[in-house]
Image (cartoon, rainbow, N blue to C red; front, side):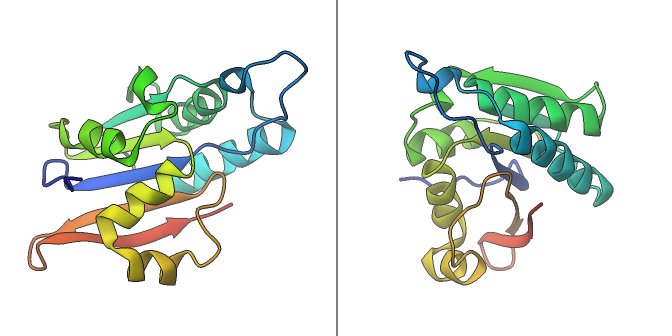
Length: 164
């Protein structure tokens, strides 16, 4: 596993908001946000915008629940935010997540994706101890990790974790 180096200098990891249970015959990929999830996606997007957390690029899984979460961020950040939907984020490994981030030239990139890969990506960036200390209960739905590259330490540092 290769941990990315700048650019980007800031990485936002946003786990999709709460999804509805699958209907009979419905694929996991097609599960939308539930009512709570729609509200939480709007709240976390507004909180991020209020704190000035604005990515240059938003990369989202193509799964319906991630698209719903990304749409809320798009509305809160302004329609000029560049969004890319990437099939490879669905059922991806942590290596896939980190490779996607590492291939970007923008200063600040947001991934909207799934657990457990989102949690594993954060752990790969900041280390197990920092992860366990910051999120003892794991990475919640609609949780947003803000990670900056600390050049003096030569690594990534969690600077904020925003929850609903």
